[in-house]
Length: 217
Ligand code: 5RP
Image 1 (cartoon, rainbow, N blue to C red):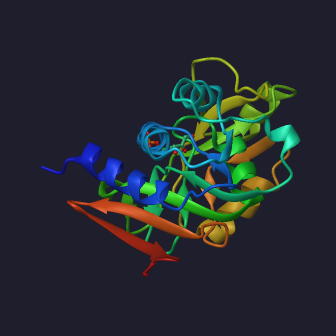
Image 2: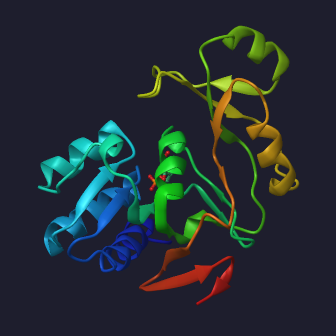
């Protein structure tokens, strides 16, 4: 049986080595990122961090990392985050933790976005559900139009959005992603395109496989 926790830890530790003194680094959200925070706290580079969720912010502060408000940071050297699915094409599905809106903003602000994952996240083709963040304004009318969207229980996002899952197939993410982006009321979706992703570090057994747009590097 795969030891996914071991694989997450290895991928996270490999990514933590990229963080050096003076860097400004975006921190994703999730159980793989929890290993990243531990590794950064151990290595203790003199870096500054922005967090993609209150959960990550609180955990990072508790580990002694210097977390800044993202309103006050104009660019990031690096962002590191987990993923729910990593396709051979380089596309990702993110948002299992409901933090994909901030995660996408942070990834886009970074010179380099590194994804960390265990091997269970590798898929040949992406599949649904695709996480969404929806506006509360007009929510009921949107849910009537967008069938197959299931609202998650658990309250609003830190930005006041409703977290939901679109129960769909993902035949072609290059078609689905712009269609979701163009739908009024969808604040953000969990499809991340390969152009956003600098590299993926995947724990596979006792090794870390590094890929870029699906190719091993
Ligand atoms: C949160 C995310 C996470 O990165 C994704 O859900 C993976 O989480 P984990 O590392 O716990 O498997 O997108 O919104």
